[in-house]
Image 1 (cartoon, rainbow, N blue to C red):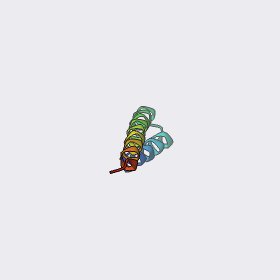
Image 2 (image 1 turned 120 degrees about the vertical axis):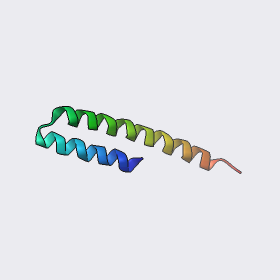
Image 3 (image 1 turned 45 degrees about the vertical axis):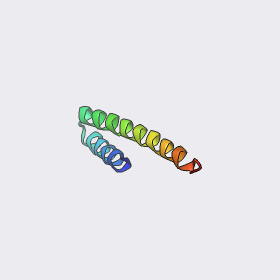
Length: 53
């Protein structure tokens, strides 16, 4: 999940440098959403993993 977020972030940066504003905005939005999903899943798995068996 984190690798996909980083991939979309790189796509957004490259598109912004080349002047494609719409594509850059969309890719940055997708990267933000994927990063938030990654953080939520990480916290949930951390909490579940810490419980006593």
